[in-house]
Structure formats: C-alpha cells, structure tokens
Length: 151
Image 1 (tube, rainbow, N blue to C red):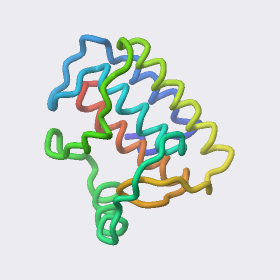
Image 2: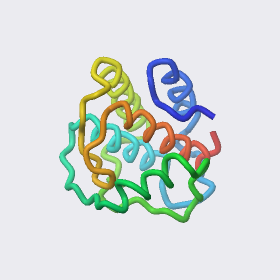
Image 3: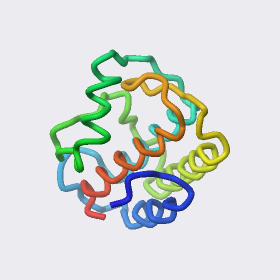
C-alpha cells in the first residue's frame, strides 16, 4: 500500500479519486462523494496554509497519537473515528467540480512539498509539521477514504 502523497505516487492517488463517482456509496459513515471531495480539498488546503486553523494539538496527540495514527495502525477503523465538523465542510459545488477542486489542491500540495519539503504548516491536531510529514499524513488519510469508498 502506498503511504505517501508525493510526485511519484500522485498519479496513483489521482486515479483512485477519479474512480469515485457522484453516486458511489461509502461502506461506512455519512460522507457523500461530493462531501468527501470537499473534505479532502479542505485538508490539502490546510496543509498548504491556504486555510487558517486553530492549533488544538496537545503533547499527547503530538507524540503518542501521532505514532499510533500514522505509524503503528496499518488501517484506521472505518466508522470509528469522526473528523471534527469543521473538517467536513459542506460541498459548495456539484460533485464533478468538487472533485476537480480536490485534484487541483492535490497538485498544488505535491508541487509545494517537492519544492520545499521542510516548510512547516499547522495541523490542528499535530501542531506545526513539515510538508514532508504532511505527505505521509495525506497518504494515510487518503488511503482510509479510498477504503471507505471502495477504490
């Protein structure tokens, strides 16, 4: 399983995003396909610093939570962990447009992480992290939603 979103793996991630259709039903949770694309776009924009977020991290999440969520668990349990409501914004457009926006954010992220992997941006749960580490975070996060939507 691919665990990082970077230039060499971006086509794999994009292919899976393209495999999700407007009527694809999730195996768990309440996200619609358009809602998923809005959620993924939002998380990519946060990692780029395009959307300001509040630092809600704490020492436990920056250490133990980080290791558990992004290194020890091979898969996140479906339907057991719900993102905060502000991380699942309502779609602002039809599915195809939301998917296009998510793909564009993915491209911007890959480019930025390639150019400056040591740049730090704020994760609301993990605190300031580098774009290099965001590549790992996005890889795990996207893989979770690909399982959710059966791609």
